Length: 123
Image 1 (cartoon, rainbow, N blue to C red):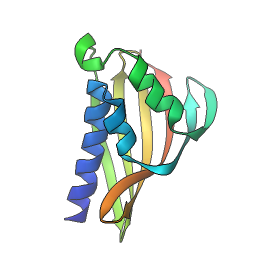
Image 2: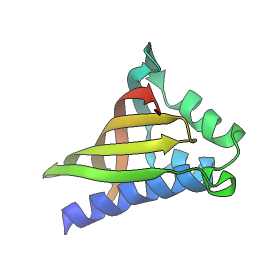
Image 3: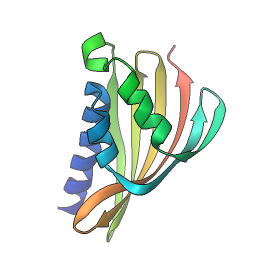
């Protein structure tokens, strides 16, 4: 059952990105969540604010009809922590991502505590 709840939370993440719901997306993260990785070869490390702002300021993928696909490749759960590999292709039509989302159950709710990622330009 726990794995199902984690998968549902990650699906909410995917859906919020696709429809451009920045507030929903922000609610999926723990208030102290961090994000790090490589965006188009550039190292980034910090909180989730730039990601949320990008979703808020960019026309939603749903409305622009980009060829976006997301797949949950792996879910590992140990007690109240989880790790998920999420692969996204065609993010905003131009980027591919491999994301490592780490979730934690806090007050009976799963939250993303960190996001590590790498990206490449969609070929």
